[in-house]
Amino acid sequence: MSVIDISPLSWEALLCCFLSGIIIGLERQLRGKPVGMRTSALICLGTYIFIAITRHVSNEITDPSRIIGQVITGIGFLGAGVILARHGAIIGVTSASAIWVLAAIGAVIGVGFPWLGVKLALLTVGILVGVGFLERHFEFLQRGVHHNPHARPKHPPGPSWRPTRDSE
Image (tube, rainbow, N blue to C red; front, top):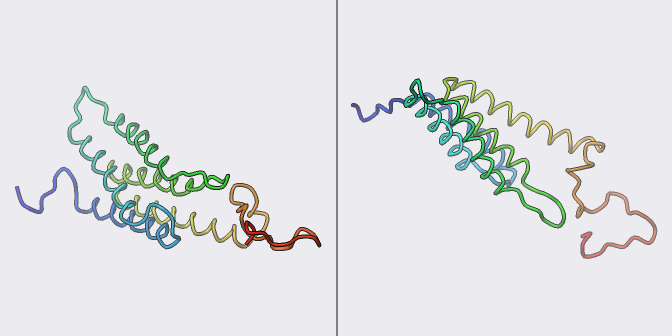
């Protein structure tokens, strides 16, 4: 056994896990959101390891697809940890979703499609950045779940409006 031999894992898959995690984590980190580069790379890597090892130890009695289901359940708890209620608003749902996607990417890499995982990471960042751009530039997309109740109104609501401590 060689020092650089990591069978049944592969260096290519580990690289793809690292790249996928860094791609998504960098976007989250640059925006000051939870789940930065380290966490993202570790989620992707951990999921890959579970899936790849399961493929190696499976036999005719075991069902390796059950591990994917268990990863989905477990990652849900990790994602729930970044969701918070603050001042009546729920925050962290997008970061929780990113955690879920990172685990899915790790699973894709674990079942044997390493570069597809990197492509999915790029697609994920495209969604995060692209939808964010659309929300900032189209007013009708700024309502609903992304409405910031503490943001200063663009136009004061009337002649008697005066800024309060909460609206500043």
